[in-house]
Length: 389
Image (cartoon, rainbow, N blue to C red; front, top):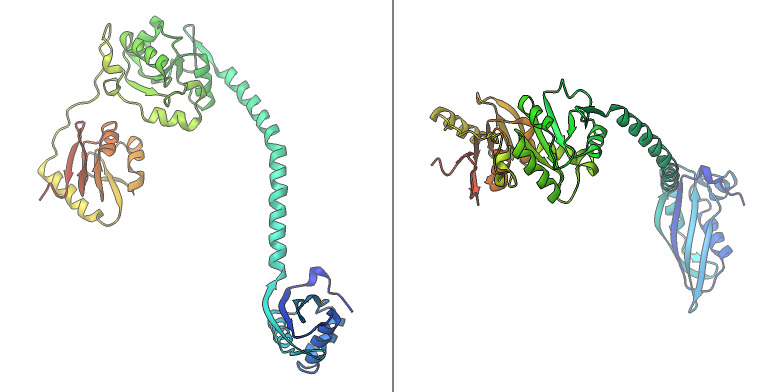
């Protein structure tokens, strides 16, 4: 009895067998061939199909219990979908096995190629994982070695202090504590960085703060607060940025560095800065009183609010009330620092979190449907749909 090659099998027919009596596997196979003979015509004669390999070996698993035989029948097929379905229907026509009444019910016709693809994909995943496990450590070590070499070649000194290249030509400078912090920021592609060398701030820091925009970037711990207080007492600091609580600047990832610098704020808005006794240089204030919008502008903003209602979006406007961009509400808070709009109109409720974010950017007006639990407007003007009625 010929067996179809595994790579030519397209479908597998599965059927349940129930027979009122005790029979063997050859009895079932013989019944399938015998009762389908002449039923389907010469082109679909089971015996001929098996001889040519278009139907594979019919497999039978059968058990006998309490005078009855039950089991599973499997028929491999390399015929097309329609012909395989016809063969399956013919197999269901078997009603006797030997002298016993029987019933065969097809439960499934499975695409064998799909199963082979699943096995192939699973194996490919295993091989890829092994390849990645083998390659990444070596590649990572090589990358780290090259990166470290570049960092060490880029780090310079500025009047005796560890620094990134080009401090003289930079318009702004980021002040960090030590050499390790400078190296980490160079690693993240930030080069306008200068180390202050601890709490004993050298005079050069005071001098450079007079001519450049200075950003103090300190650790998120008590040591960072101490350095910040000392800096604010001797230098003219424009902005304060902090590492996440409990972390040091030298250990931050690129994403954490970028987020910390995006959240920088004028010293007057920082809790530590507010307790500093001013000495040689008064701390700059960057929060100017915000003027009220004209009735024409207020009316236009409320008209814009009507337009965005139901869209779940926010529109950001420049000082001329021209649209800069329109974004989803969920992205509003994180976008303010990047876009620096003057007016914000959105289809939502104004919260304290939004007001806090707006106060750290250039936003003067927020227009929304309503407001909720806003206890401190932080000099940001608020207009709501309800307040205009």
